[in-house]
Length: 462
Image (tube, rainbow, N blue to C red; front, top):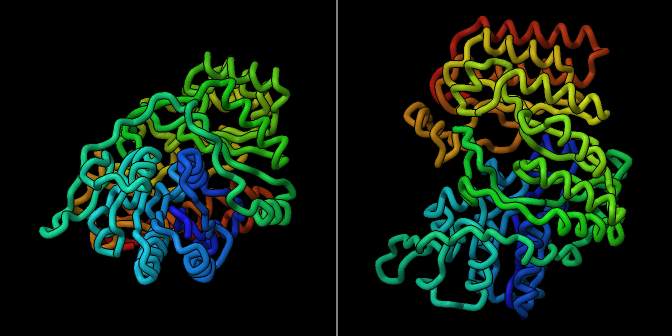
């Protein structure tokens, strides 16, 4: 018998788009939670279902280990868990029901669980860990009285009503946290999948938590608008540890926003160079932060690819989103990255309320002029807790979450149908990724215009 079994519900093969991409990463928050528990002398194991049949593997772990507590602890740093996908939720619910049948206490943590506490409790979880997870998880594992644990939601005995305890304060000193417990999972399948598909092996890290910007469609159920960053030296030391221990060829910094401070970035670059910790890495940031000096420092540290939330080539749409950037920042960032040979990726979002065809054309024109190396396309996706959700919630039908990351369903009254936006994504992806396929690109755009000239989408219909 062990004290705690941690697992998650990001099973890659439940998501066709992610299975095709085949860029699997270990569940970083889950492993960090395990490290915190182990540091506190709890016996802990991790059942990682990213690349395995979750049903067979989890049942085997439960029967062999007989944990007192089973926690579905999602990776707060992975964008897939932040998307609150239906298939992930279904796997989490199945996990709770299996664990309960085997006599285990159960808890859930993640963006979706924080947004849908009642549904998770109804599905069989004894409690939900809302907000930043480590201290709440430690106190729950120590069997503190539920009413004394900040950040916990549960049903009160007798009345059955849902009790939300006071929210836990977000920690400001991230350097006190231990390194993730990578040793509790098998790293070999990750390496094999990466090498087979891409010819190199990538691992994930984070340097910070949260984002201080206030784009009105961005859901922040875990950290709110708080932002805290680890010391540059500590991050560089972790890079060196990964380099020596697991020998990755590449790092993905999964921060919501990396290199927010120019000073921090310069100190990080110096620490990486001093330690000899350089590993080629990609990261996510904002266009207006990618100044000449910051990009130069990132290059010295080993940065090879930067993804930015360009969102739209229309200033009117950016302003409606409360994005806080200007279209010219996209062009400036692209020029600064090109100067240092760093790959550029744009995250684009179509379908925002009031977006007209000329706004879509402006975005397509911006992509053609800036020539990013890759793009990621979404349609506006309303998630609870956002200003955008409040704006469109009255228009939404029964479908309120995407089934998987490739769904791209319009769930409110957009200007065009889901099929048109999917065709738009296909055409623009093809143009950026395979520009030599002229005929295929022409056919793809013909399909976009065919669907555009059809009917305006019905409210809530995918």
